[in-house]
Amino acid sequence: MTLALETTDLKVRIQLPDAWFGVCDLSVLLPGRGVAALLPDGRQVAVFTDRTGGLYAVDNRDPFTGAAVLSRGLTGTHRGRPFVASPLLKQRFDLETGQCLDDETVRVTAYRVKAA
Image 1 (cartoon, helix red, strand yellow):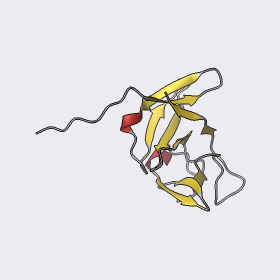
Image 2 (cartoon, helix red, strand yellow):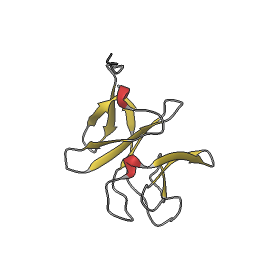
Image 3 (spheres, rainbow, N blue to C red):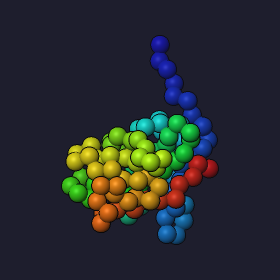
Image 4 (cartoon, helix red, strand yellow):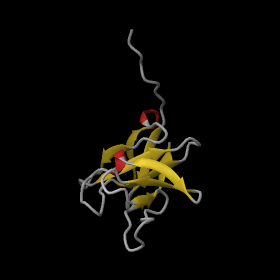
């Protein structure tokens, strides 16, 4: 027997400087797990959802190592703020602002995101 994935018509979109860009179907996101998507300019974005249905998108590139791995990081909360921890060196990035919680001088781009 083969199980079919649940699908919806909702697409996850991030706001780029000139328009909203569709990155994936909402149905592929699982709480606590990231998905990487390629942007038109060749960069990558890491997209997440949480158990309450919140959507988040940040650059997928870890600024400490240069590797495109944040979509594979562990998610959690710190003082009520959602974060993703890099799977390599474990620095945590706020999913709403992109600010590194372990080094105030570092941040990744955080995108406005919606399901439409």
